Each structure stands twice: as C-alpha cells, then as structure tokens.
Length: 356
Image 1 (cartoon, rainbow, N blue to C red):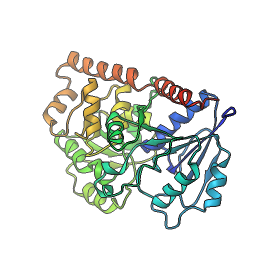
Image 2: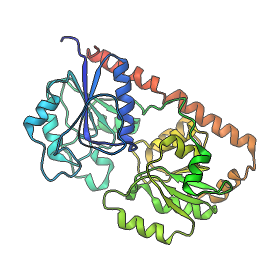
Image 3: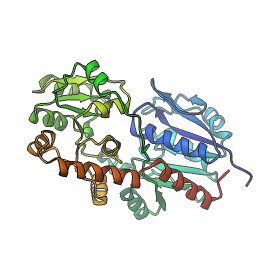
Image 4: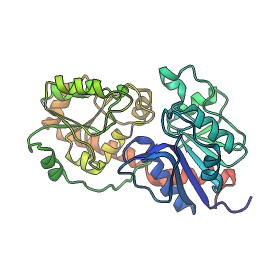
C-alpha cells in the first residue's frame, strides 16, 4: 500500500458542542499531527461548527433522514480518502440506510469505526442486531472499556481510546458570562452543559438546583422531541432557570459553581472530565461508564446529596475539597489528554500499516 495522506471523517452531523463532534475534532487534530490531510462528510454542519479541513454536506446522512444518500454522491465524497473514520454512524441506528451504504462502500478498505453508542446500550434499539458491521480490513475503536468488552462478546475485536481533552484549556470569563446571564456574584449557578433529551435527566439537575437554592442553567437545545417536556420542566421549576445557548465550554465552566450531569446513560460523558480541568465539583449519574471512571479514582457527587453539595459550596472543609479537585484534575491529565489520544491512534494506525 502506498503512502496514506488523506483522512475523511464521516457522521450524521457535526456541531459545536455534542460529544461526538467534540471528540471528532480531537481526532482530527491528532490525524493532522500524524501527517494526514483531514476532510469531513456529514448530513449537516450545525451553526457554530469549527473544524480544520474541507467539509462536504451530503443530504441523506442526517439523523432520521426521509431519504438515503445518493450512493454515487457518497462514493464520490469518500472515494479520495486513503482512510475513513466513521463517527458513530455505523454504531447507533439513527439512519440505517446510510449506515448500510457506508459499510458497503468501505468493505475491504482502510476504515476505523469509532463507536460511541452501540445499539444494545439503548433500550429502544435493543432489537437491532446488524450494527455494528464488521470487515477484516477495518479497525474498531470504543470510547470505554465497557463497550470494548461487550463488542468482544459479540465477536468484534476493538481497541479503547478514551476521549481526549486539552490539559490547558482557555481560562474562560466567569464574571462576564455571569453578568451576561443576569446572575449575581453570590448566586449558586448550576450548569447543565448538555442537549436536552430524556436520558440527560433534566428533572434531576433542576431538583439539585432547587435543593441547594441555586439557579439552573441549561446550555444546549432540546432534541429528539423533548421540547414540550423541557418547556414543562422549566415552567414548574422551583428555582430560577436559564436556558441560554451558544456559550463556549470554557465560559460555561468558568461561570459555574457546580456542574450537573445526572444522566441515566452516557456513552462517555465529557462534562465531568471537562469540569475537572476547571476545578469544579460535579453531580454525576450512576450510568455504567461513570462507574468505570469512578474506579479510576474520580470523586463526584450524586443527585441525592444536596446537603453534602451545599456544605461543599459553603467551604466547610477546604483541605478535603482541594484534595478532591486536585485528584480529579490529576486523573484527567493522566488518562484523558490529547497526547494520549494521539499516541493511541499512532499505535493503532502503525499496527494496521496505515500511517502516512
């Protein structure tokens, strides 16, 4: 095989803040560092998207698209790539015709299937058995060990490469962001940096803010038909609520006093790790990957600990609090750095013979 120089990353959509898009950008940066030219193909590029490289919007790849993509157009979009990275499109059945078409076009060709959400991890997709597809030429990568083990049980060999984060992120504008939101200096601001969908447990996050006398801030849009539910939850909340989108992550974490991710399920869950870089306490749900990360030593609150959270925020034990934040930061830098993502990809590509 000749030198490989072009890598195309393909998914349903790419946006500014969803987990798949955030991780895809870190992979793109790693690929550029390894000598690839990176391009992007998706059904949509949402407002606020930023990513290095040329983009191609291909109708029919979107989530729940009414029509599949044109096979010739898809072949053209992927045809010049020496390597294709499929971000979740062949993992979660949100557009099965597109997944089948991508898989058929990539058989026998260098391809990485990057799995964030396999179907068996979502109750509504438990009967879908055709995903993920497999091929002897391909490499499979999971974002946690739980999924890697589950794939092995299904006869698919995968490698875990955890999501990566900038160990030295921008500082963020705490005062400016809070002022823009109309939040006073002495207000406890509970940031919920997610898209509003059922599994993100908006009700639990609001309940935490209510219990500690805080203000609830949802930073993402409602999706998957959750809009009416969200409107109701915000309208009956017994605390001030803010639904303000468009702030960059560094300003969200800088402005927050507490970060909430009380989800019932996450493929990984970026906010608790991101919050560690900003030395913020976090409320985290009991989804399985959170347990995997807790076993590494991460220390977080649960949604049913309002007294402990309020005690923390009131500075009851500064030395213990400092140790907890120090530990979370150390674990994040040691396990989830961008350098570790690049090293993992270099090893994977080297073993496959796919390095430029």
